Image 1 (cartoon, one colour):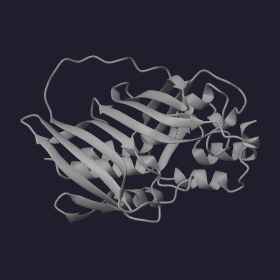
Image 2: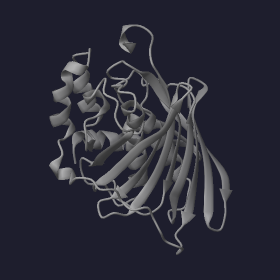
Image 3: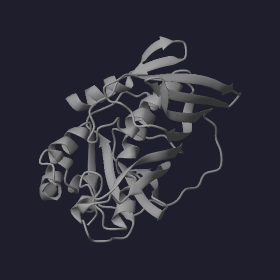
Length: 295
């Protein structure tokens, strides 16, 4: 296991301070706020720790309310909304400095047999043939005004082996492309067999690249380049079938719409053998800044 993955696992191992109250810390991010995927994953950890082990997470719906302060702890308060015969529902509020910064509702279900069908997995190259972040990012160093940006991006993704199928948005600045993006990802090391851990890790990664397709449609490079500003607004995930986050997963993303200073991303995550594991939808603020960066 990599040191970065070990650090991330420590981040997800929340401290329980009351029966349904947990506390977490943060790690440095590329932008000066708490990474949204971290808050979502920690909130799901908090919810999952109040649910019987035989009930797996099958959906979450979340809103990002305020930017998180990476220098302060985050307190997660869990409400036990419902414990039914098959389903369990939890609501989690993340609080910093006395104000809510994030709200999550999650549902868990006991396993049962049922009807089966799924969308086919799209074609994609073998992830082992694609460059790693450490190999790919230095190629685009000249796209960033901040000379330390490449190192910060590599550090932020060190716990996860994330590989772009095509050039990322900052690789084709000024060139509008089809609003679709694919990445393969897996953790940089083996994880324990706890299903909740794998779901939480996928939740963490799901916030990294989902709005890339919005940027591609307009030839924008992204937050690191500085030709857009933005943040996640809401995030929803449905977990359809078991998967392991330490094995290759294909994140197939697209954007059906952008308007009103917001962009929508939707995606499907497949296992390497073609099973549809997760569906993801996210809307975010995507604004063109005023001044030279917008040109």
